[in-house]
Image 1 (cartoon, one colour):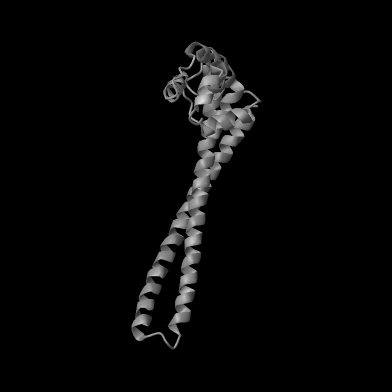
Image 2 (tube, helix red, strand yellow):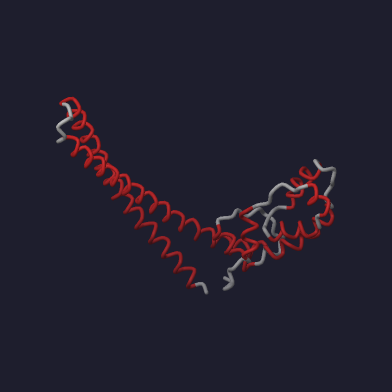
Length: 208
């Protein structure tokens, strides 16, 4: 496994941000070899030229397909380096099958390793988010129960209002208990997710 797992910042930003529609000036002045090279280094398929063709046709301009393909071919050989595979997978980006046959096996091995780490980290983050959400809901319930308690003893509160408050308090109590049960289950899920992540990180570290 390669020790260098860093995709250039520019490539990552371009990869994740995508590209906006091309203006008439951009279509008319574009260096299509460079456009193809940038798409290649970002891991976009050669089919991206179809989008440019559609955008530029609105301005009466046709992309230079030959130049684009030449640049794209150069770009993918940079993108498909083994050292980029892990970073691309870890970013959560989808591999679009652009790598040539001589580079794809090593790239995919690294990509799949990074992708697995991304999935395990995302799973743990998701559980943490759900636990935090439940705790926030419980705090909201506690605040509402406090407010109900104040209103219950207020002289202007009617008997009917107090009865409704008792019913509401019971509902809130049940919901609080349900959230507690869910949190306990989520904590168990979190322990499993964290263990899986730590074990996988240890596996990656041992591979260096």
